[in-house]
Length: 436
Image: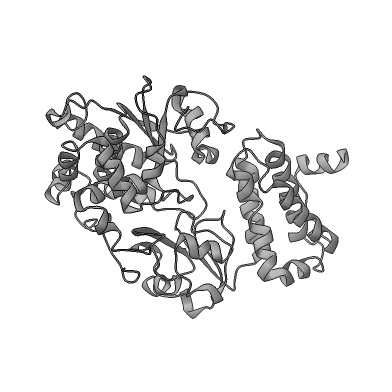
């Protein structure tokens, strides 16, 4: 299997100025997979995706074909396909470039996926704070509709499909699949209690498949080239390639499409190494919600299983790298301020826990913390992890314990630094402490 080097597939023709247009996409083989798919049985397509081993590229890494197979057939209910394009994880930037550069790959993947799960309605939920992506995908959908690739009796197959491009309101919580469904239905985006799972009772209480942009963009290539072709890349448990978005203190931050199993050291080489010859201090494999790693982990394969073995997750596959100029205490505090702000407030562990953790970290950052407080922070994180309605609580409970694992001395030193008399904790945190 190929686990090294760059393997441009989704990004192969990004240098074409007309790739985002229908004619440009068709010139490089676009919509060939759709014609092939519509001559196959829907179950055969599901089997192909299942055999390919494609895992969800949104962070969880759940097998895509298996998720599709959960949708009950012959139930008399409408089926829906929803694309989660609400990319808003700190450090994550790979779905938006895909939608900007190659939107028709996403649209073709949507049509094929909807056909496979027997859905006649599909929704592409895009973060509203990125209007360029909303317009680009909307234009691609309009072009496909005008060409007869979306609508009634697509390519004479008898399959009908309506595709709606929906702009969200910029809420991080709507990246959680059930909160996204509530938002699509016109409600405030808040996660639902599971079960029932969306595959059984999703959008409008009907069977629904929710997939990430990159996941769906893989589908045309798999259908066109076959399941065995995808397994030529990556590893046995993590087959295929990944659009890695490398950012942080590197010379050439950007998009690097490579097979799963490539090491962070090799990706760092492609990114030109650390800026100004600095040394790597710590890095995160997939956004701020996954535990950090250090330079000693640079040679680990970037796969779902190897990252789990190291005590972290591949997540969105958007590595952030930091040099020694960064304070771990300040970095963790900034991330927690984000999660506190974005908590929907539905469940107590996340709503209250994020305020307490953030307040204590801010005190620590400004010299008002104590060594006893470090233990309290660990306890707080333990009370949140696994107890919240959705993964946002888990994400908030992740950075501090991981940072303490490798940089406990920085947190201990923060308890001994000069007090910043100008520090004023947030009113809500003060009120909580008084109430306690």
